[in-house]
Length: 124
Image (tube, one colour):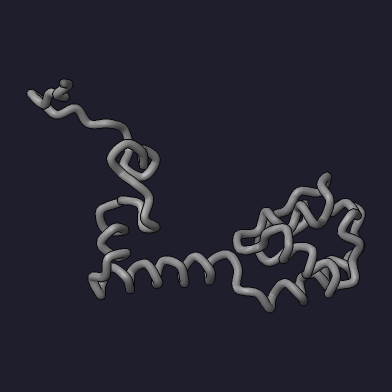
């Protein structure tokens, strides 16, 4: 496995796909890194030479990725919670923050249903 920017990426996949294993690098950024490093994106990671890997590392180090990006995201969420804004309150209560309905959906965010004793659904 090749190690790029502190992450082990798979050898048997194309480099444009392998780069997406790094947190903060998606398809478009992986293609951008390949073009700036002058590496063929269709080449397998195991076939890359050490100089090509070095050029990918040089280009990739300019982006905010992995630990720094995770820390920035966590700090942004923490800031929203500290200033007590609407989105911060939604984060604090583990509810959807982007306007989705919660009466019938949002099970991923809310977790499994909790049965409340003696609560009956009325039907007419």
